[in-house]
Length: 633
Image (cartoon, rainbow, N blue to C red; front, side):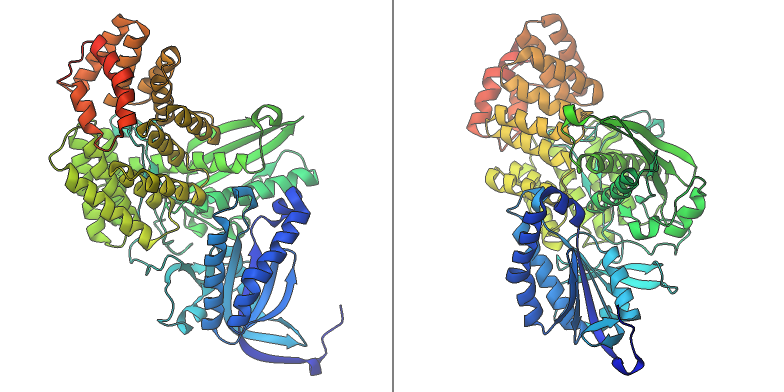
């Protein structure tokens, strides 16, 4: 490379945009020729026309990224927004492993011009901003944020001052909210839960005895707005850092895989809007055999830290992972996961997706315990967490009613909170599940309104689309409900709850065989099935008339959950199998949870069921309940 002479160098102020392809190495390993051709086609059809439209200049490109120069921050940001939105639309028709996503960073600053090339601090900052962006997202510097005005239909989330590699001063960073919402003043909140739905929710994992020994399971997923890292004594709720996983051997292949696993795990968790995850670029600085976890947590401003090791034993991959609460220094969770490609068809995405789901679940459970024992904790997110604690610790109708009050308060604290909007819709649904309600039409209208508003505020929020799917199902708008659930899965591939809800849609439209296939896909996301997964397996097998298998699944479901709906199906399954003594035991348990329960009450609970669904109910469920002594009315 030729040295730069003094006479060749000039300086100027410019807007710099750096874009990078997410997971480029994996794409190339899978299909190098196809990836190269796809990137070339994207450049010609999407990227280059937008660069030209906004007067940008391509300074240089690499296989996985490009450096662009614009005359203004406004032009650079317009270009980035339109490219990311076009890419999101383009990816909808592609399988998940073929989707190309960009991270984009934009800065405005002083640059050195050397012929056609540029360099300098302004470029370095743009590069660090790109590394902080989420897949499909954009991060900008405070200089860019100050330069753009009201001509953009996006919002900005201040994610605080970030200390990045090779730049001494902290950078004030803003995340561009492509959904168009202005950043709320308080962290955004949200939760996912089961459909028909055990009171323990879709995770089916117990929360400890601080919640009166009642197992709590709810898919809670962190804030859209991320408080400044390293700037507060009290870290934000549901905050996590993933430290570099350590390979057991010093081979180049294992070191590379460990680095890839760490980055992919961080990326997977960050797609879930509930979890505040420290960027890999910051967490990667903390590696080695002796790490002071409280010190690391203070520097990254997180409460929980995930660590792990991996080793190859022949063809088998063994991953050990653990999660530590840095305030108490107690290990919240640990597990050894083993993957055998020959039997589990492991792909490069399998391990980080399963770990992402488990870590999010464990952080969620711990935060519900904390919120339940700390009613003074301020903010909309904490109020949502307290609402879910009420929902899952009281299995009577009083639980959903108290939860709804707290969700309403969360929304009052932050009227633009996607978390509170989604949670309040979930609260209305929880009340509907308890049976006929004179307010059911009003509740359905509220669910429609709340979830419609949530996806309007943030169309890239998986939880909002999940709750939208649930609301549309209650309204009997089945095609729209399926489309909403597919949107949720596209955004968050490891969201097992979305698939399980889709299986309920299949049952509700009289397609139990398709429901069973979807359940099996859901279980593949994380093989240790949750209580909800077992319940949907139970229902699918039961409505197929496979009563022996249904009993096994229903027994597991009832053992994992604390829900009357499990006892409904277990009662009917025993009776249809011909085991009336066990059917009567299950019936008695049902009547303790739901005194005076009748077959008609079940029918009236599911207002939006199709004729095909009620044909299944008559043939299988009603007939089984009658055999067990449950009256029609």
